[in-house]
Length: 444
Image 1 (cartoon, helix red, strand yellow):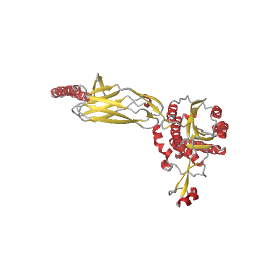
Image 2: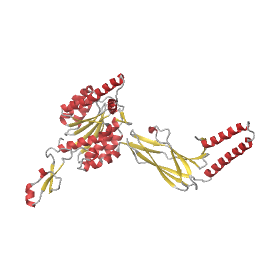
Image 3: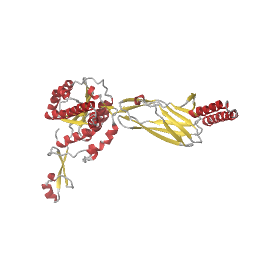
Image 4: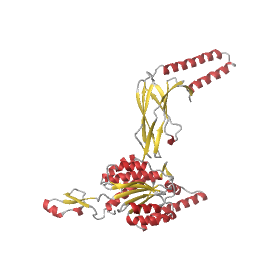
């Protein structure tokens, strides 16, 4: 679209005008009367071009721009980038903005077109969705300004280089933050939890309020006060909860741009925050060939920052995961009974049976919850109508794999191991549900 002449760029409109002049010059060989008209038209084109250049370059400052970036990006979420433009021209101008966004996005046709009013300040915004953790480097901000004539453009290059780190999804963390301190668990589709018995610590005697459990009425206090009084209990606290993330090859499968590993990392960040808000101890570690990224389960003010930094720095080559090493390290390092949330993936029963002895060993001393993923592509294939023999064959195989996922759930249940079979987008919500249910039932 542009031909570069320093900060001046010739636009397509100029070349189209020149093409028309050339065609008319050719036609003037057949119609000689056109020759003088074409010469005049050529003079008009170059006159307007010089006028366009004059009005664009006489203003020294012309345009001022800056890019406003967040302190960090949230992985897997839409993050806003703001552009501030100040137009010093005394007439309306048209701008074409090309921002040199980080290479991780692999966007080759990024541009924003706007019309700016004379001597005005404008704010533009666009969104980016990173799908990998790490450092994202922005380059220069290039702005091409043209007048209403549109024959040439003046480029303003703002060397606004910047780096933004992409952390696990802290936007999800804020989204579910209220659930950690709320007793109303109906929002976001969270199911009502049936409380079994009273495995909670006594807190106080208080006035009865509509909705309180009638079984908690304290009849002695009621007789003394001559009004209904109930016993109030609080959940048991300071229980260790570990998020264990499998970073082996089974977690490399992509879904909506993110790997299963990154979904697990985002969920581990959110559940750690919920655990701390529930006055329990949150810890994490990851494993593949060996156990790494260990954060001991504690409840302190700096724990969330430590967990976030550790999750940000999880790197992997997606090796085969060593469950025997995981079992040995958990037995040696975690001496107190804890809730272990294991984020992994099993596609077949054979894959589970190879690791089942180690899972049973962990479940002997701890409350183990195995969290693995539904293959949503299989569901899409199953729901499609089969019209050929090949499609029938593919559908039968897909149904077989989907059925094996349900068999894995039953196999784990047989040995008293909790499991969550979920889709990647529902992972965080289902994990919170399970943790709250375990707390409410006093299983830990």
